[in-house]
Image 1 (tube, rainbow, N blue to C red):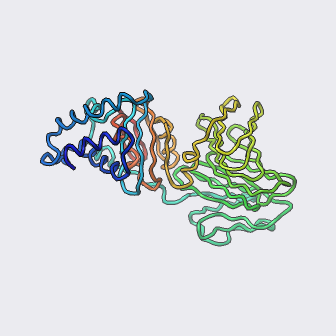
Image 2 (cartoon, rainbow, N blue to C red):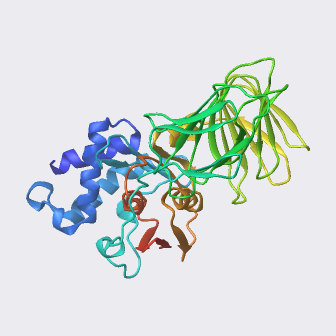
Image 3 (tube, one colour):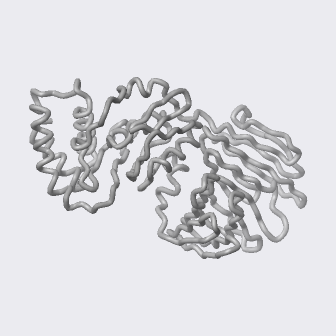
Length: 377
């Protein structure tokens, strides 16, 4: 890439007209600015002169952008190609690190890999616990007239009917990959790291009721004679459905519970408020039981189930809370970062890969020590 090509590429990135291939080229250019040894002066010319030329070309575009303080960057391919987009007059050449900072290679020496399994624990009605990672495929247990098995995809499957079913609990500790369970009525539930689902081995009577904390995605089997309800054990909010698809996010971290509806209809009841949701809508339930309805970002709500991290305007606290659950890490803050980030990257990467992408904005830096990640400026 020559100097004029680099300037034109930066203009396309800032104006939002760059192709995926051009975004990957931009990532290579950005890395070259960051790493002294990667700069090719014979092709690109003097580094400082090119910085100033790009800044002059970009500034009119950046000045026209809305003032929201967000840094936009996306992951398009499985490779490490990441494009840093412009936002609110921000430009990576204008934000140099203030003060001494250890090289990233030293700060990221103790990397933390993505979870290798789900580490799930299934507790049966009689109290017996089954470690699902070590359990083989096939029959796991028989409870009354209901069989519990693990299929070739690693899903837990309930089959059979019983008029006196007992309750089972499926728990995914932090540091777990998502796990799917197929309930006796055909309802399918995906659980994320840190989630707990309690449910009957078989549904009988006039209703179907399950209890959840953490994040779960439901595909509810339709049965108008036996309504389905999901109760959040974090705040006693109940979601009433017939047959529908939705995502529930209800962690015990003080954040709002969120219900995003993909299809069908659900009603969210808190005891203080009730709200009917239509497809494409999201309900946020605060700690006082108030319900606020808004358009849902369905891609963001369900990305975890599809093996992706997707942060859409999230701050560092929200991002690190997600990483804390998924990678089973401790997070320590030595600085307060106010900026919001938008990112999309696969979940099968080590934590350093995502932290590196955040560091590319030059707004925040990290240090990994054992299973502790420190947020530094």
